[in-house]
Length: 126
Image 1 (cartoon, rainbow, N blue to C red):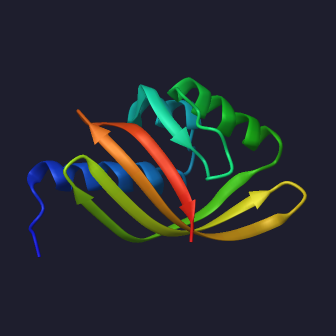
Image 2: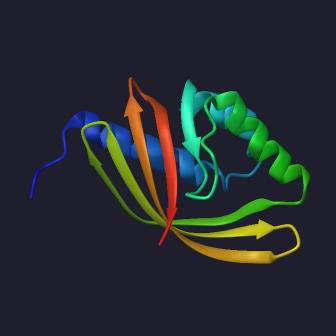
C-alpha cells in the first residue's frame, strides 16, 4: 500500500470539504462552486448527461435544480482515495427529485484536482 503525499491528502480533503459543504446550514451553490471549481471545470452529473463545460454552467444547473424543488438531502462519504491529481469519492446520496420524491443513490465520483481547484468532476451510479 502506498502512503499518500501531502498534495494527495490536500486533494482528498478538498473534495471531502466540497461534498460535505452541500449539507452545511446556509449552503450557497454559487459561492461554494466558485470556491472549489476551476472556472473551466468540466462536470458530468451522470453518464446520461452531457458534460457541463464551466463552473458557471454547473452553478446554473444546480440553481435551476434547486428552483424546481430539487435538493441534495444527504451525502454520506464512504471512502475517498487520492492518487496524484485523481480523487475517487464513494458515497451514499439522497436527492429530492421533483416528481419522484427522495431518491437514494450510490455514487462513485471521480475528480481531477489541479492547483487546489477541481478541474473535472464526473459522477457514476453504482
